Image 1: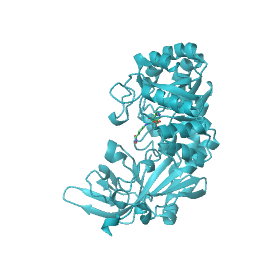
Image 2: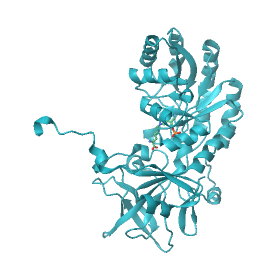
Image 3: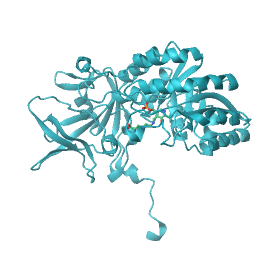
Image 4: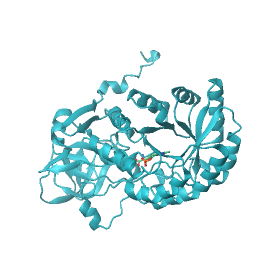
Length: 431
Ligand code: LLP
């Protein structure tokens, strides 16, 4: 659920008309709802209340300072994947002691920085990494808290590019090897074996793969707990959201009519808590998309409508550099007009101005007829939207706005175009 809905014919984010934000800040524009972020965090937090737990927001999904501060204020921690992300957490007032540091390629400098700042745990992906962390910790005369990421070899049945829990991909250490890895790691004097971690993939829409992975891994967790005194078990992120139409517009009744089984925090917790509770361990979660996905939209303006013999192209000022998910994953984002006019729909391709045929937001989708100057909103763009943006075609990064009730604030100004090449130089011999 989220807080984007029509009031009359105008799309609103909470108590603010999106059209008002466009007038003030221009397009392309990301708009985030603070209430939606808060609700998603609190719903999951409440559902998991029967176990000692910590929600570490996967900030790779949305790392705007105001988004981080919102979640830090709610008591959240963060799943980080670079020292840059840790610096962002610190800048936003988050607590490094509530951060878990994931990723297959941590550099020695990153490990040192995270160790000095006191992260809660390193989620380790290989034995060479364990050795490197041990070495850095020895040099700093510190003990590094670590958790090894187990690859449970469970198929998450999601998009190939975001499946992580099978042996076909680079993540984690094979299920069968995990206990011997812990045995060897326990010899490394500057490590503290604090937990075990797993993450099987992203955008999972049923609870079954989570349950299967948890069931498979629990016996190992218990043995490791006895041998090495683990303190936590991280079950990763990956809770999926609804991108399909109608529900994404907040129409729960429609969803129930479809007999849809949205993965709710209640279902997730109901199936997992009874298995996790007897462990007596602290449970960590690393949701990204579940918290931020439906909390953001990308607003774009129609520049031209081009009708060819076969097609109706709606050419907008947003592009694949602003939101790459349709081009990269064939991802579906619902597209709605900021001002609803009614009338007939027409099959349309919404495309950006970039010189690539992959630069589209949808193809042959029935949409209301629009003309130059009309605004469209791409829904569910709060996760893996702005964070994956680039300057391709020397297009400045979009502005971002946060809404809270009737209040709103620019939480990132539109990038000035000259900032794009500010770090570049003309080589001396060319002058
Ligand atoms: N934990 C780990 C170790 C991860 O690798 C990820 C995401 C998460 C947590 C958070 O997953 P979430 O709860 O957001 O599903 N760019 C892609 C998604 C990439 C996900 C990468 N890892 C997309 O736009 O769909």
